[in-house]
Length: 182
Image (cartoon, rainbow, N blue to C red; front, top):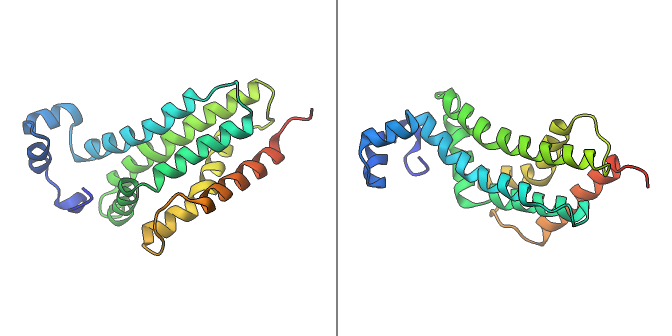
């Protein structure tokens, strides 16, 4: 998809590149949109698994920093940048591409972070009414601007000291806004 775009990629080509029969691709994924969704979901699952692995034994600020670092590294990877560009380029002609990208990517990762935030709320570490909205805001603060610049090709997608500073600022702003007294 990254090389040829959604419209010009065929299931025949995908099957050949994967070394499987075309029927196998259809059996596993149903069609191109489902295949693209599966690719995006597999990448997002690496992030959601890291959230689930975060320990309650480390301070919430450290855990949140590590979560946002993992997310930022994920979205700034070359494959993720290519997927972002593809979804933006093909969204109007192929709404199923945009739907797959959002549902299996950002929505999936936001829900995972929202669950983690809800757990922190249950532990009494933060006070917030809507974990999903908070998760969405956090992910946007941490990564959307670097992702936008990289997707437009006006910045190199790297995770560096500036990325760490951005994430530390996000964590500080967020926790200062919702940390429970005491």
